[in-house]
Image 1 (tube, helix red, strand yellow):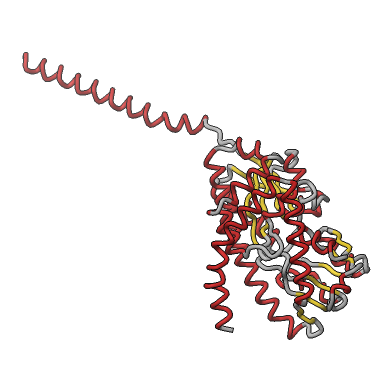
Image 2 (cartoon, rainbow, N blue to C red):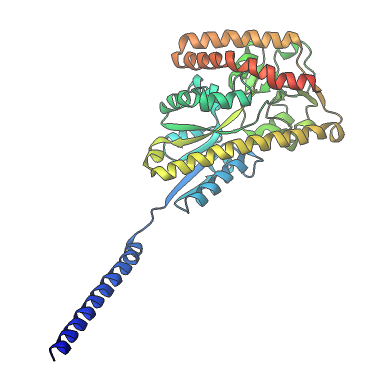
Length: 370
């Protein structure tokens, strides 16, 4: 009898233990579900303004691609809506709109802001400056990114590389440019430091938004313009009006830019900051590859499809005058602007190391294998 009691007591203890374990497991299983039900994922909805018209080749594609990458990698936590110049109507006002917080992001070109800050020009390109390969190395490993953030901190934004066009062509001209006298009084659209150089040589310089270039050339508002290169120029139709197409000197590595409002970026969680920066960097290099590909394909088509186009190179006399004017302007600006001088010194110091390698590698290979 006592054994039976002991067995019953043991069984009761076992039942109680099992019940306790089951209750604990049940509570543990319910806890994550309850937490998941109550957790609300915060969605960051951003707007981006770009200088370019809707569906503009390569440039707008790069912007759209970044937005798609960010949405996918963030699992929808960061969503970027894009407004083209067709909508916001201020293609050359991107920096101001991002600074003011009207847009959290922008896509444009840094040298458009030279009227506000001359130092911004270095982060697109400078006449007779670095190639794209040299410039990317300077940005990411030679101190260029740090200098760029110093400059743009004054304007309430971060700036990141946004796609490179490589060497740009020297422009489309209605008439052949044979001597320096042919430049005097010429009305030309050309932005950045190159515009100041040509002004020194007698050119009447203007800056016109991309969407208005063809009309200005067609109506005679301007006599010449530079845009990018065959990848984009032929689609614009400039060859129908101005048949003289000159090789480049002024923009050897034209880097576009992503602008990001500093306050908006700093308020993002760290993982979203990393996702955004990674997406911009990846698309920057992809856009450069796409630009080179399209430039090569379109340049090859000129001879067969547009036989009236004459590809020219500026004379030695003209190039020498451009270089001299460039040197004068650089020194004069650096003398009055410590930040400008610091960036100029950085690029010059870097090029003393980089250019000999460029000559011994790419240049020597191309020269010997034409």
